[in-house]
Image (cartoon, rainbow, N blue to C red):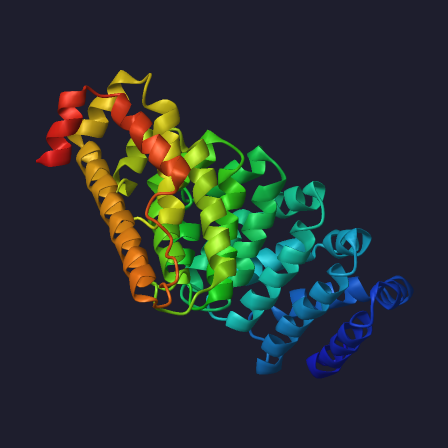
Length: 364
């Protein structure tokens, strides 16, 4: 029955106490039933017709619950037992309250990341659909990071949860979150979540590939490596995350046809080598895939890749020799379009086709 301002102050007090470690957080929650109090505040503050102070109280209540859940599995379970998960799901789908969406998504993340049981609890209470909607509301905003991370944690535990994540909209929300990421941290969260889904098998990876995950991850990787010319600012963490997720989608996606467009000289070397490895492993014994590889133009583009690689290697060797003769310092080595393994894979792919067909595309 206390005013929202007084209850808000209590929630901030709980938040400050829990910031001092698991021992203090556990003492506060067990001795004062702080989790239930904060959950009740979040629930009451969401009622229609409340004063403006109720909106701030709602966000602070979820922030306090987040701080409690951060301090271990048992604390996260206590927060979940208060019924706060369903309140948070309602908050992340509230288009009119961005602060509550952000704090509620952060609370769901701290619960879902602890155990498979808690992740299933979030999913069972409608968390996945709510977070997908939250990503749509926060597209292009830094707040999207929390929803993307939560979906990634849920999907990471088991294949059934991964399929539940892509089952809502076939993975488009995560791909769009990556496409519209406003900063590196948001992009890393979306790329990581895509990888969490894709690593569990063909069904999830195929859905993501059809939703455009490969192109989005490749574009994000190229941007993280400094752009097409390689002269921009690099973000190694984002590049590593995108590369790992691309590998999962390529390995588990199943359909080679989805990879044919990536056989191109503009595909970054770090991605292209994995694409060629997948074709080298599966193309030889698949007649239908070989026919598609030719008709889609992938075989022709592969020859262009090989020619560009050979030309770059020859130019680098000539420049090094010229520096030796002139006594000048040799230029810094650059990453070749194809490494040794990629060269072997390209030759193996060419070996799956008649020599006259390969020669035609190589010299046409």
